[in-house]
Each structure stands twice: as structure tokens, then as C-alpha cells.
Image (cartoon, rainbow, N blue to C red; front, side, top):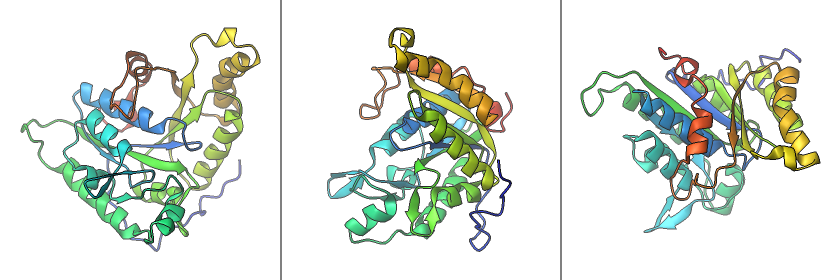
Length: 273
């Protein structure tokens, strides 16, 4: 793939704190990156790591008591047992289920990129502060993107720009079915063009009895190997469809939890194993 590390320049923007952790991005919208991000946060917490979560901008939010609330932020917060408020976890929130720059216009608002950067600095303060129980545990962040890497947050500030600034290893969440090879390889290409570190790929929504699904089953069974081989990237986990996992209900099912637990997230987040 082309070496184009000067793409998506962010040198004119203020430097952000460099933290231990992971950034979870999708090959597309609706691929399950919120579930995977939450499951990673829960896994780290269950292994004695302090975790703070961040969703820089959320769209498709609901109104509650006159405020916009992000369901994704609620799920991430519950999974991580986060100390930050929901408004701090998701500093920008819009009602329309669209790209943030479009959702903001529909709401008659501007995308305040500085609010995202300020929010990340607050996140850094939280993860570096003494833990509420006084225990000196290792600490990290899990950041979930919005849409794919090239999704515009504002017209001239995209998810990939933010990922360059926070400089966390990327966990790329991909669909299990048809079309995912192309989407995943394009995402890998964009990430490498930006000089981003790639931790690996998580395949989400795999059907356990794929062998009985005919042509669709063949695709699901062969996609992980194809992505790993053609993309020169590790497959960190293959997460099955799990009806007991629900972002809306803030629940992680046993199949999701087990599948995600197969990766060493502490090592990938630059923490001691």
C-alpha cells in the first residue's frame, strides 16, 4: 500500500495528552464498535485496570429532561464503571442520526472541535488522577470513534484527524458478512496513510452456524483469513451474534464477553499483562 504518512495533517492543532489505551473505529456505521469498545473496557476493568471512556461526538441522541443523551455513552460508562459524567464522556451530542457535520447543521449548531479537544484533556486528568478507592491500579482510556475513519466531524476535521492527535492503537471493527473485505482493506489503507498504529481487527456479528447458511456462510467463514492475509493484520477476536448483548439495555452477553476476552487488551493498550 502507498506510503503517505503526511496525509491528514494535524500539525496546526494543539497537542493532546498521550495516554495508554485503545481507539475503537469501524469500517462503517452500525458495525458494532460500541459493543466492542464496551466489551474491551469491561475486560480491562475485570483484569484490574482503571478505565475511562470517551465518545467525542455522538449523533442519534435522545432528549431527556431537555438534554440530549447518548445511548452509546451510557453503555460505555456502564461497561467501564467510568468516573466521568455522560456529558464528559460524549462532549458533543446531536439528535439527527447523521454524520456530525450534517447533524449539527440540522440542529442549527456548529461543531465545536475545541470542545472535543478540551474533553480529551479532561479525560486525561481523570485517568491520571488517584482512583476513588485509593488503589494504585494501572489506568487507560478506550475511545470510540463515530462512523468510519473518514467520517467528517466538521467539514475539515474528520475522525482520522482526531485519531492522529490522540495517537492510540486502532482496533478496527468490521462486519462478518459480504463486503467487509473491501471496507476493511480501505480502512487499513487510510489508517496507514495517516501513520496510525493498528492493533488489529475485530470481526463482529459472526453467525455461529455459518456453515449452514450457504453462500453467506462461506463468506463469513473465509472473511477473517482473507482480511488477515490481504491486510497483513491480526484478527483479534471474532464476536458472534449475541442476542443478550444490548447497547440499549447496557448489557454484555456471555458470548460477546468470551469472544472479546481472547485478546490480550492490556498488552495492546501498552499496559503490563
